[in-house]
Amino acid sequence: MSKEGGRHILKKIVLIDLVLVIYIILTSTIISVRSENKVIDVFIDSFDEWSQRKFGVHQDIIDREKKLTAQTDIKLAERLIGRILLQIESDGEAWYVNPEDKKRYYLGRPRDAWLLAHEFGIKLSEKEIFQYAYFEKKFPKSMAGGFIFNEAEKSQVFYVRPETLEGIEFGSAKEALAIMQQEGLGVDNVNIRKIEVGDLIK
Image 1: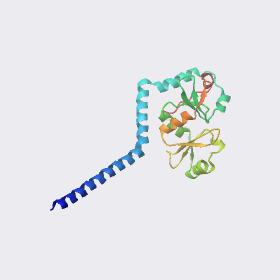
Image 2: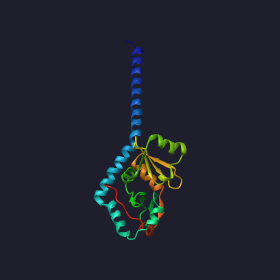
Image 3: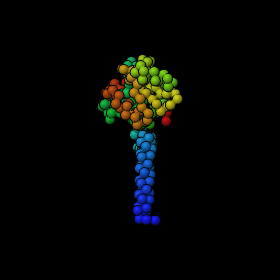
Image 4: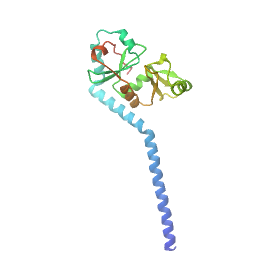
């Protein structure tokens, strides 16, 4: 084989190897982008579970608030149902006032926000969700402050803003907690402690 022929074959081999390397990098990137949120959620949940077992911070906050919530005000709770409350005179703890029992539930961990949405959420068909969220741009008033999820695809969840009835979509525990914190209404200790504290099923 001539030197020229050998160089030609070598160039082809190098080109093929380069294409393979680029393909592997691209497919790895696609896989990572698709799974990034799930990996982050798993990591956050695992760390939260470990930290709560070690320090008991989550349950301590719930127990503290139960003790300090002596006299409840049902009318105040009714005005705030479906709202996300931020305890501004403490450490900014986030709470959700459940429309069904008018109790406030602590949103300390991403997992809690996600579980709460599915615990209290209203199931709708994909067609109904499309109609409200994308066509009408708002949900019925009866769903104000509630969580809506697709009965066929439970990872698609909406929080319905009480004021505008707009549906805010989220698809992971991390996004759920972020949305709840963004939508939070600051409340002082005197008033927030007039709303009874509830516990999520562990």
